Length: 351
Image (cartoon, rainbow, N blue to C red; front, side):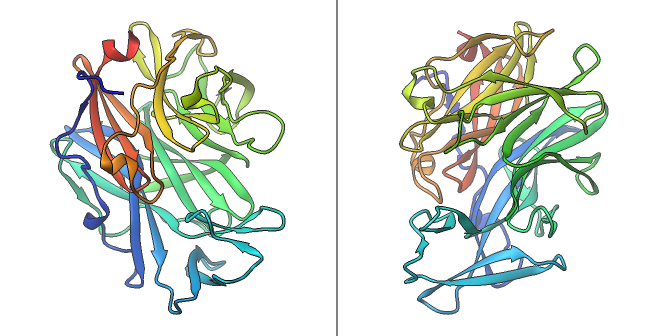
């Protein structure tokens, strides 16, 4: 879909794997993407998911990283010719008999990227947050950052052999992070906080991951008195629209933006071919459980080479958005490989 008002940054991707130092010498960075971010003191801060793999010492083996019980990097090897294992998805190792995921091929942690102009970034040499061994032995994924009450909150996916759940952390300076624990147990992900209280309550969008079970992978809404205890879980919108581009699953992208018409939510939709595109919702400003309108066609689709080819191809995945004059500035993950920027007029999204 071509729209001349959609202005991809000429220097896209703005962050690539070539700019990232591996956590250890025997690791290789295969993706820096899906970043949560904010603007602070005139600078753009992005907390980026960084995926790394291990070098396999033997050509017929796959060696995968994980966080061991002592909180240190560990590894596990699988023979590629094992008839009981499925390696067809380069992100995971599955048991062919029961379809269960038994390992991830990469380990994700968070790197901080900082920019004076929103285009050229300096990347931290080491992770700003590393996974913990209990709930994140397989990594931390897809952070979103919300500025709320003079603090910055990160919602992110904690991944382990126990499943994928939503955790919360806070920071004031991106130097020291306070882990607040898992707020939504597995299976759940794609959680974003609203940037202010509504009628005295905190609100959160999330996505129970229900593929292969009863129900669909839809966006839900919940509220809380304290950011830690969440209730009133209610389905907000689903993938039953009949639109092919979002027929498989949907999930919240960037934290909601307050606009004159209500709350603007950018989200990702996935089609039957696992192609990720971006759409938008408009929610009522006083009751965000009410959907006022929704895009029937995607606003942004994988078109450029850097969006169509990578660790996981055909993907645009929005995680950060700012209002800047008449535009919405969006940072998104491209093909699970790099971070890109696009500027879109607010009126283009709302029309």
